[in-house]
Length: 337
Image 1: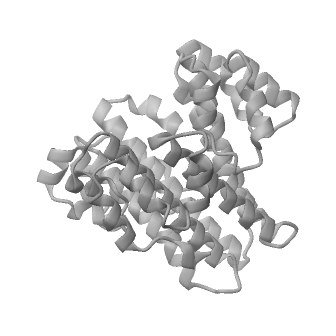
Image 2 (image 1 turned 30 degrees about the vertical axis):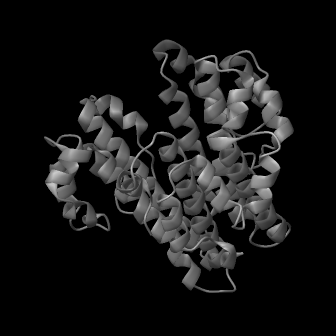
């Protein structure tokens, strides 16, 4: 499966293509050919590419899950695919909040987790967020628990972040509990999850500093379980004058690379420079597992990290081409690994 991942040269070819149609033609000459041909029966242009990429990634996760079903690695893959369940629930909630048509919400979903197509369609049919939460609760579905607990607070504040952060907190707390053992796979997955928590919290901290959010309010939106940045440290960061001061304080942590980004680059491109650097670090950490114990879950984690980056980069190129962005601008948006 790893041998079918796209080489860097392929992305260079896509970057010089003038439009979506020429990108489609190039993808037909890749392992995505069956997905593109199937999608082209119903869609065209960017919608064709988006549908094909969605289908390909879904099949990838289904294949991986089928390989480990009933085996010792199954629980770890479940932890990884549950992130798609969180993504899907958040997407439906956001769609309901702004009254998007059911079809548009469905196109944004990825049924690669425990929530399959039939289940997601039933969720989309619900008239509002309350009905959606009630449906999940009637199924005794685990992610109904945090939503039910925080729904009243959401009603009072009318802020979707209340529901979304409750999902994140519940997911990461349970994920860490499931890998609390001393097995090699437990330690490997726990390390990745803890790093991901650090990065989410750092991105949240940066946004809070930028928006001057009250630290007492911000405390409710941090996740516990970070690898090197406990909530106490994050709250200390919120007392600092600016983001650059926080970045300087990270010199002794694995995130010291943020301090190497020139100030003029940050000034020109904004907060996204730091966010993309953190995302790249997380991707590299996932990819690095490919070179660890070949008889463990490590190669699976490494492959899925590489596949996710490939899909994200293909989406970035396709969307940027529809906006007629030049090659250099598109290249800046990619996740380089």
